[in-house]
Length: 241
Image (cartoon, rainbow, N blue to C red; front, top):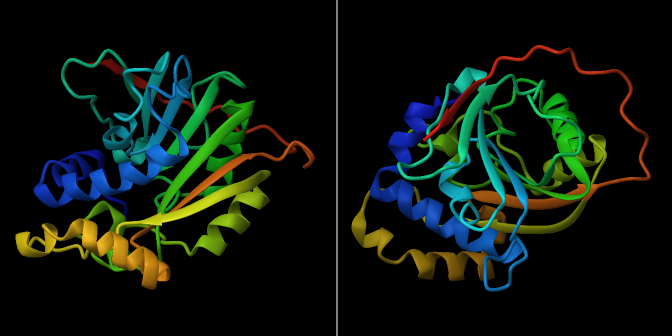
């Protein structure tokens, strides 16, 4: 069973969790740059799964930033002082109208999904036609996917190829890929202090053993529109932190 939101929050409150989030955020920022580039200014951004530690990259410049955790994980709160929204709902019945988000970040979501295809189908629905989806998933060949004391060690890990095939089946076209988190999932501060060396060395010599895969995709507008509507089961709890 996937970690709940409380367990994920506890992990990211530790030194190991904060460092892991920082290393992954560095790679995410290359996909969707922050100001002064301004590519995220005025955008509507949705984070699915347990995305709050990563959405902080863009929440100050985005017009709207929403963190949604699946109902089975429970609600997650934004940090104190943030005016953005957190909520929980069924993963295959997102409580948003069609075509309402410019960007969707899926992290600690794909591997935890009860039905990954239905989840991605809902993402396709709420994402604008020119929007972008960024998926962070534990790499099945990496160390982090095999350690249950972290959120990366729960659910189904994926290889980059498996993520690509799943995305294609959900009518997304993969445009860019990356990897991150070569740092071993250890509490040892001596190892943690060498995090950047681990990242540089792993990226150059052992890219297949990264802790996570990162995949950016857009809607494949030449694919057939999904047949059949998702049942309207919606359970929503919204909090303004």
